[in-house]
Image (cartoon, rainbow, N blue to C red; front, side, top):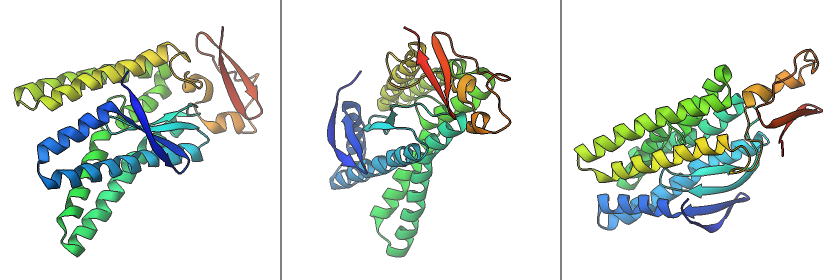
Length: 262
């Protein structure tokens, strides 16, 4: 939707910057003003990279391949080429970013108390806000992904995505109204981008593999928990998983392969 360009590689993950991330840094710079704005922008950039690196490293540990880390208006995203095999895996990957941000906030606050430097206070606030904001239960933010994973255990991945997108849209409307009422128009811009990106999440699921690589199907129906397929008491014939519409499903050892039907 918006153009991005590559900066480099970190721990084997390509780092890309979306044009919307530059808008975010511009908003921060204009809000702060002066030389201090440059320091805040740089701290914000580094904090977002580490936040997304937390996602990427946990994803790699869980066997989920990461195409790249892309920074955008909402912070960033570790873009996966594989889908998490279970709701638990998605929760772990989504929660890793805020966990890193809160840890950085704690360390920064401690350093601020020991050194008295305002810079560490700023770094603490940046990471605290970054972690808290990303936990808002609205796709595509981390809180929305956690909500979708939890809901998928009851209603399946597709319906959970639809429900999470509805919640994200209500949040976007409220944010937009707040931004206009208080004349903080960057909140209105944030609301518009949130609406567009949550709609993109819904479109990706409905279109299956066309928009996103990897098995973008319902892991509740096919792989709700790893031990469901790996446990000795489990039987493919006695408890066959249900393939989502338009997909085929087969077992390969302890792995479940979901493929789109042409």
